[in-house]
Image 1 (cartoon, one colour):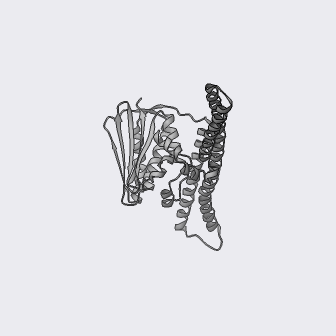
Image 2 (spheres, helix red, strand yellow):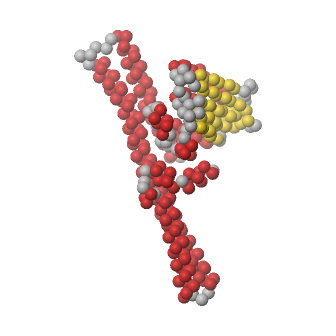
Image 3 (spheres, one colour):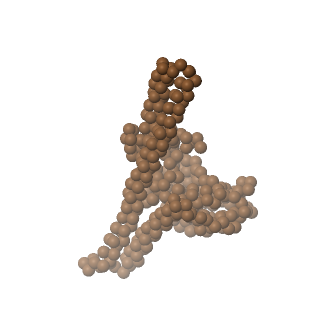
Length: 314
């Protein structure tokens, strides 16, 4: 809660986030209008005190004027803020989607042009490698489109989950086995620990798989070779706690408050890897909240990040 309040008070940061100058920023305009309201209230008081004999009437008039001006300022500022947010989201959406789709489409186009070329004959032993490249790029596009579809459902309020009894331990164990190949190829140790006799939870396995895949993939992707990723599952009263700790690049403190927002990617992460839509963590938080749980993280720049989520036991 305090982080949210601090984010709202960070006027310069909010202006940068919207890509607006100070005099176009809704938060700054609200402060300017607040100063105007104070001055208008003082003027109203001075005028009223001079021409109206009753002090109570003067105070009442000042309060009415100040209240009306404050309501008008709030409505106008909120309208500007919604417009600024919509403009920012539209720009980021176009930029990210066009970039994320352009790269794999270009790779696919180039691959097929080479394979169909009469001048350049692809050796038989290289053809499989080319088809693998096409398959990986198609998978990237499908992943992005899946994320966009989920976000669309969330925004429209049609996002629903079916809670059934599942073993989070078994789900994570299967994913760890699958991701070990990816981790070993990156020279990263992937360790998994689960408390004995861990109770089942109520959740939607397909959506929970999306959450855990996102968190494991991010942890490995943003950990440099020779690092470690540790996953733990433990029981906490009537809930099960999932924790994934990496020794990766970490998240700058000033950017941590934006980490679950749509299309947001920390500056240092963007430099490390170009792949990523900035939708994964937003989707993760939406799913966990829908399942009745909580998700949060702790991070230190250059030392790694730990993501947690907690879900109720059946």
